[in-house]
Length: 96
Image (cartoon, rainbow, N blue to C red; front, side):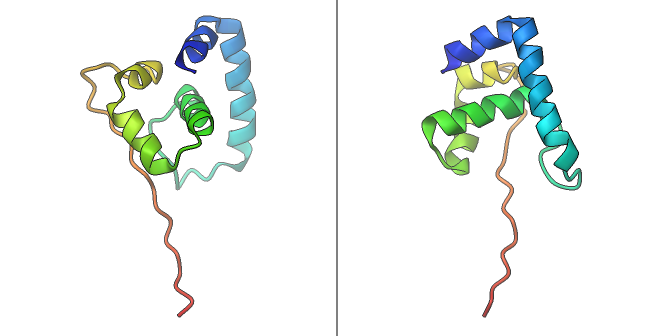
């Protein structure tokens, strides 16, 4: 999976096409008061691919994004970067 993402990233034309499609899908409906500041479309794409491929929950995805060296490199985060991801939990109103 990571090799496939590396190949896609290396092909600038294909990468730009994929990110253009992603930006058209996200930007019209984005709520700028929520979400993760600082994430670019490549990081959103990579994390989406990883979550889908591994069929994992957000807690596992967060752990991988914060601690898996190869995945962090694919996210274009250097080994010395302190950037960390977290899971945003929505408030759930109790019907009690």
